[in-house]
Length: 67
Image (cartoon, rainbow, N blue to C red; front, side):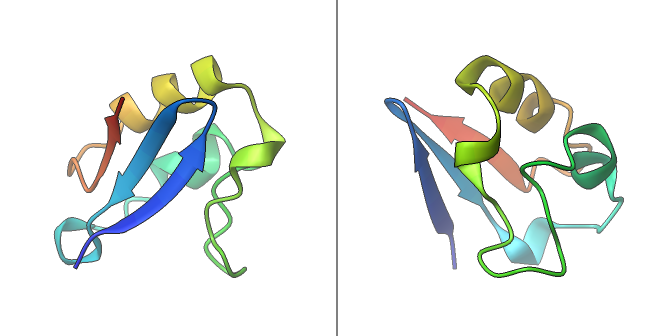
């Protein structure tokens, strides 16, 4: 299962089965990645560039970008 979240011409893909719950996304960009809320990825709270940078830091690669 892959979940999609859209922002300014990109799509953030989240693959929950790959997620190791390291918390790097939430610690790195807490305005967007909010694990206790639904939806847990709130793309309106940061720039496209900041989101891409944080997604690329995901150690498990459960988060990725599709353009």
